[in-house]
Image (cartoon, rainbow, N blue to C red; front, side, top):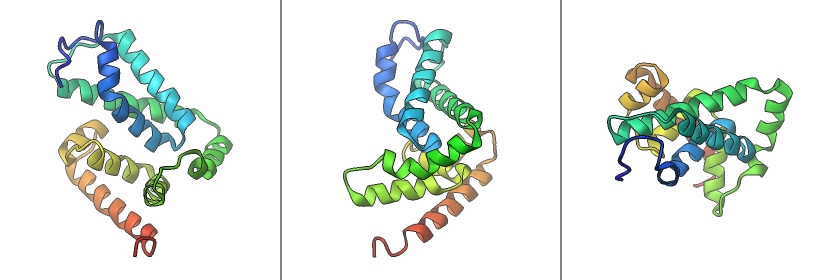
Length: 165
């Protein structure tokens, strides 16, 4: 992926195209519904456009976008009244469905995990980041991330037991 120069000014559409699935996927996983994920998506790329950050390399741009997505998602979810969040969680299964029933079940299981496991699993499997990279983004230790991955996998295995037997 060659998106040079590594400035935000002239190539915003290229950056959006290159990272739309990354930003939206993280936002959807964190917020659990499309409307909020759309808001986070917009906020992230608006921040990118306004700040016009300069990067040393493409991995730095990706890390900035992921971290900004995590922060915007957290701000949106934490800023909602408790009743709204509870309602969103109850409706999340009806707001987003995949073409295959298995994918919908896996996604629903992922969304039902506590946030720390959900985020670690998404970044590991969908964004293909290793434990060290995830730890840097989440300001924690790689060992903590590895434990979150292990526990998250175990919780998902228990939730999905019998569905795919």
